[in-house]
Length: 320
Image (cartoon, rainbow, N blue to C red; front, side, top):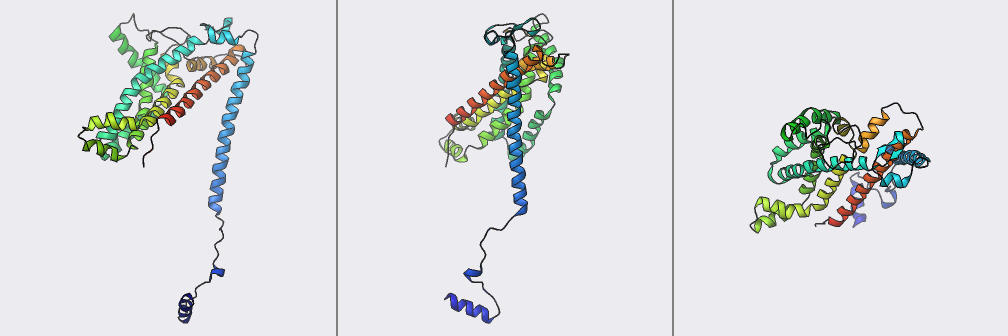
């Protein structure tokens, strides 16, 4: 049959190549090869950059903890941080960091999750295409603007509500609220993506059983998107812990071990920003203490990322 078809094609001047003449070998693609090499180089550079940053942190932190005036036990068990007179208790900075981050998450999680539920379950495609980009614009506002917003608007508002004698000019509450406004778009966007990834068939099944839209969102969609929501929340916490300018401007400029959010206190990042901008000599104990605090901050964020991966794996649900 194949021979007859070939003979008929040749009789009308059409040449059909035989199997031996068909070239199935891989042809070189110069453009793809160049792009692949560029992507590989970028990946290697990012890895080496991360390794370099960690190496510098460990190297300088080793000099700090190797100083005769510094005790690792004192660093983690005492409660006064004054490097100028040899006091290296890090807990005032740590508690202020977690206090402002907690206040920020108390603002960002409820409002961010509510915005995500609205965009995912209630808003039309047209409204979503307009509202979501506008919400994400907030994430592009410079953090120094949020710092002055906290100092110039949130703090006077809190002082009018709770009293001038209760709320200090520099306080953790205003810094935390501004931080929550900063993180809100991040949590809303990530949470909306997680909710939108839930199959529509689950919603339809819930509607078929007589559930309302709100009941479906709360009892079906949210549990199904739990892994993505947890990841969004922990990413938000990591972002809050590493925030610098807001707390440097609005929280305070001195370590203070306090549980009162209306008191002034200095966070780890705020202290690093203040000390690094001063006149400290290279290699001094104040200089190396910055890297010790940076290493501690790196360990905290690394632990949050590891926790995020564990929780995502724990709550992940796979649908066919």
